[in-house]
Image (tube, rainbow, N blue to C red; front, side):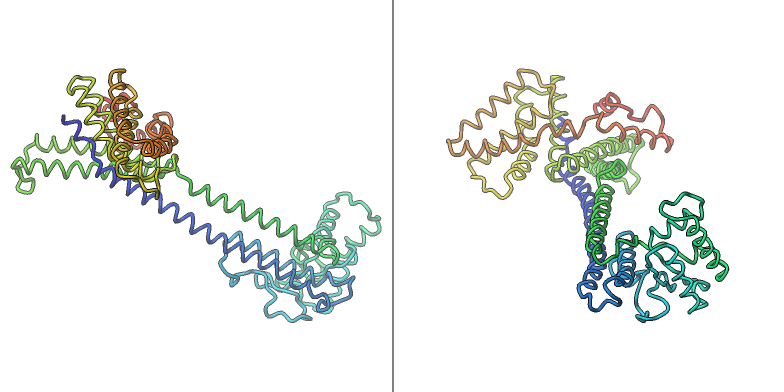
Length: 483
């Protein structure tokens, strides 16, 4: 009967609480990062809204309807840069935005600043005309472009210039226009003493995108880009906080440490009750061997329990108390089943003790399935008995036909005590329980946990554990557990 006492519901519930704390820490960290991401997205969206607010009052925008795109381009440039920075860096406020209008006069030599450097935006129709406008501004402000300040022109215009400089064919331009563009580029480099690409850089917008009749669709496109980018980052956060092999190993190691410590403490206490005090040096070598073996077994069982509870809570969406109770029932019934097969206990003892072992799991399972529903007291006993029987059938797959019939007879006996209304309550809760499926198969399936087993073997070898003492497969584990 010693095997019956090997299952420790209190220990499993404590391990379950520790695993739940590990899970909850991961979930809390996920919520923390998702909340920060939401704030960053709101901040990014607010930058684009500033552009919409700006164009809502066209009378306040400098220039005629044909030239207002100049100031619109400036607003889009700053807003788009800052919005993407908000998402890329998960900013919680705008204090570190790299693009700004702050401290810039509306008719100042610069239009805005990026990373602390002055920027002049030139959105002129025609590539040659755009370069001519840059040179005109340099004539008015000779130091501009030489001290880290730079110009921004439409993205498509800048690319056309780059293609010309690279010798690529450009459609729609005469050879004389191409030569004039090259001459303007050379003049800019001569005046500044710097490469063209340092002095003149591409903006975030093409020339057509910031025109008065096109700006609304341009802003819609940027908003869509931000939304997609935000969803991708949220998905990445969620993916990064999924249950993992590494965390499963931590849970297993934690369970092993707890199981070993728990077994060591109970072993020392058991010896104390036998009249031997470890603190007075009364332990013999045999006593230490007994306690040490119990600790090793406790560590192994604790590790397996923690791994199973981790699997059930994360991959079967089961609460930690129910998962812990199910693991306890599995170990208890497996031990009883072995004793029954060896002839150490009778069928009646196996059935009675098995139902008792599973009672905790049945009660927790019933409460989980029922939620806040009120269970009539007369039904509760039959419910516990019926689900206990289901637990036994579920976790002891090697039961012979005689044992299964005995269990079914017991469950029928429980059900026959109920009236029609109580039977309906029982059937509803049993159907909820049945919907949980073959959870023990998922929790203890060797193939599903193959990677976990392989890593644990490697870890044991790295710590110098003798090869014949390492559990490498299910047969080794069975031999160890029944030794």
